[in-house]
Length: 562
Image (cartoon, rainbow, N blue to C red):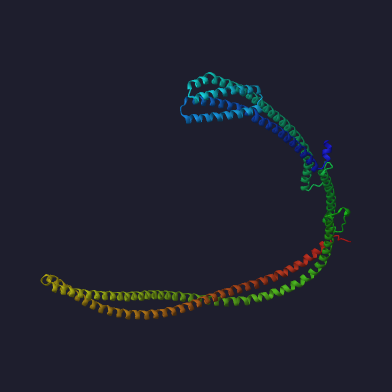
């Protein structure tokens, strides 16, 4: 069985395992569902039969006691409305009793007891009827006697019978409850046993399949570890018909195949290391798939190296000849570079003097710009002060005009006051002796009005003279401001031109510096060319010797022959 499982595909192994586990879970689920269904039926039976029977007999006992209480109250009360209400409650309780008896007759097993209850209730009903007749006749004593002697005894027997029915219902309910508990316990045991069995089977299958998968995987992991270390001498022992067995077999074939390729390449490259390029592979038929381009690349590399060696041999002769000519040209170049260096030094001295003069001019222009900016700033401040003076003159002019308006109002008030005093004098004259004092006051008011008018005229004249002088001053200020603005505009033009001249001087100085740097670079290059020419001459002689050495090294190789 274990070997059969070992030879199955991994997918089939997993399908078998999952099928067993799922079948076990389905079996557990079915058993649990059946158990729950049985428990449900038992619970429904318990609720619909024993529980309802107990409830029904309790309701009957409650209704019986309620009827008995209400009947006694009917016998003792004199309130007709209350009596009617109690009788209605008695009828409702009797209807409820009949409904509960019908339910018990359908569901209870105590049919004999129910028959006795019906008989006793019939007797109690006839006695209750007689009691009510006594009550209607207002014969309360007979009604109470009937109630105490007969009706109460019959009702007590009914209650005893209902108690017996209740005890029987409780017994049936307890029996149904015990059956339900037994069923629940059995279901627990069965489900628990199935869970244990399925768990054990699942664990065994998990261990078997895990071992079948992990054993070859561990061996393949060890093989890949050795492979990552560059060791292709690997022997795998796992054999099976599943995917891992096929993987192990193919992995072993791959390692053997790579070993052959590596051995062949190692041998060929060993020959190359011994300067033998005339080599051929012994296992060309093994170079298949991605290894075939490797073989072709190795062949191409050997051929190209051989051709390169031949070309190097030819080129070394040409280099030896060219290096001797290069040495002669380098000597001539060194001589010319020395003469150029002298001429460049003289030019450099001249450029240095010119640069110093240009820098000094730029500094002078910059100082002139600073002075111009200072004058420009002072002129701007004067312009601002002149503008403030103009605004002040305008405010004085406006204030003078306002004062003139006020004087006009004062004159108007003086005129009105004078007219008022005249009217007061006329009224005082009309009053005769009684108005003499008022006439004196009116005369004083008129005098005061005339003085105010005269003062207002004098003040107006002075203000008009002041306004004329202010207007003249304002005109002079405006002319001065216009002249000052023209001066500021001229200063600004001069400052702009001076600044442009300064910038041009600085740019010219910077250009002279760049020229000086360029001359330095030319001088350095000329001197460097002279040194390089001398070095080139020496290098050419060394190159000739190295070309001869290279030719001797190439002759040591055995070149590839197709």
